[in-house]
Length: 476
Image (tube, rainbow, N blue to C red; front, side, top):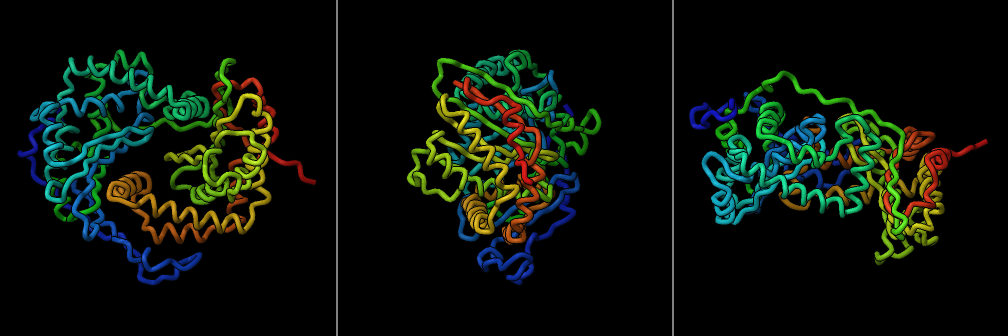
């Protein structure tokens, strides 16, 4: 395979660009004043190697550990019906041995370093990362390149892994929230890549061959679609040199020509799986959202925060800020409710997930639809300002640790092509007005088709047209 050329024989690609993503020292930005501790956040260094691979890092003074990983612009969305599940299958196989390490040797080496090696697959990205001491960054990147580019993909190990993935599928299907969201994608994006599950179909898991995995690597593991990201005790220049050394033989273009993804077509529809023996129902109601780069992305984040979430076991009880959660708690029509806003490259899903008793679904859906449409007409300035503060706090808490920072860097470079600084994010949040939120709600919710997935005791769940009719208010 072309990817198997010896790394030692390839010259290190030079870094052709190196710049610091930082912000002017002024504390006054559009929309409000940014605190000094945000302006003084560590900068993100970004370089592009001659192969097109990007290297990005954030040095954290005083840190003694590093998270370093490879973020790949490839996930289940890029698969077809015939190779669906290949990205996730490959994630399993990369840890089963390489040309220079057996599975046991790989595990022992990581444990002797005191490190942690892991991976995950999503619909649009595949990620492999390691957490190590700062002295072991070189070894960690070498291990990552070795498992990614020179995995054995032994046919015997592939056969054994099928049962492991099938058991994983059984466990995932026992988690109702995971199952509901898979059903939601299947009905909202039916007939497209986003509608398929990450694990793939059971038939594909049983029939995928080594050739399918090799073809997936040759098609998607190219330098321009990969980002090496690190955070913690790390030197950017050294990381560029290490990445160039160990990923130097990555192809610049896929073997079969340019890779394209099928467009995400949202279909207003629902899927209902009824179990009369169940006393509870799990419901996900969603509207077509927006992409990562849409101008409506940040207002949608505020809408998600305004609607919020609630669980009857929480200490807040009925004393929550969200009007939707407050009404649902007072009426006692749900066990829990949460709002989600999922973004993809060209689309998204915005909606509500709820768990409730089977005989309270009619009232529950009335409260949910009423509060969704209320955002279009009656969002208050107080709600927006509170949501801004909550969103900023959530953003900062989401960067509390090297692993979270590395994840943020890798994801943003794949989705935005750059990394937005915390100061820029604060500025974008502050610039949103109440009218912006209302306009976004009008675009996404008002008189729009929805997708719904429901499982359990759903005999009282209103039909599609009932919910569709309540996606708008008649106002004279």
